[in-house]
Each structure stands twice: as structure tokens, then as C-alpha cells.
Length: 71
Image 1 (cartoon, rainbow, N blue to C red):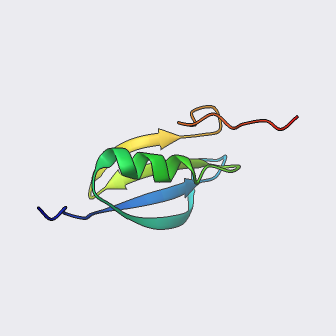
Image 2: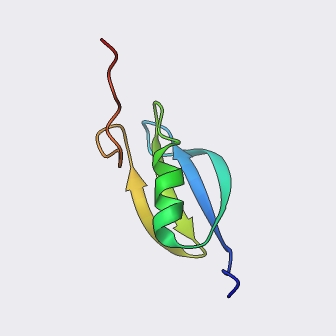
């Protein structure tokens, strides 16, 4: 069975709440798209959208996978 690819957009949001960038993501489902969008969080918030529906919101405090520390 062939998996359907869905298209998402990860919007980069500045501290004032304005969109300053957009990254297109193609995934098989919402969960995979959420993992990819969460990995994009550096300094700014990320909003993940599919068509006109917001799927998730990520910022530095809402990472799916905690960062490992070396030491």
C-alpha cells in the first residue's frame, strides 16, 4: 500500500508575532510533520500548518525530544 504524502508549512515567527520565513514540509502524517517542525526551533517560534488548519506550535520550551547535554 502506497503512503499518501501531505504538504505542510512551518512558519517561523519572530518575537513580535510576525512571520518572517516559511519552510515547506512533505510528510506521511501529522506526527511526522510535528517531529520535523519541532527540529526547526532554534531561536524563534514555529507554527505548523496544513492548508488552513494550525497543527501545532513549537518554541524553545516545547521541544518533542529533549536536547542531550555533553559532559
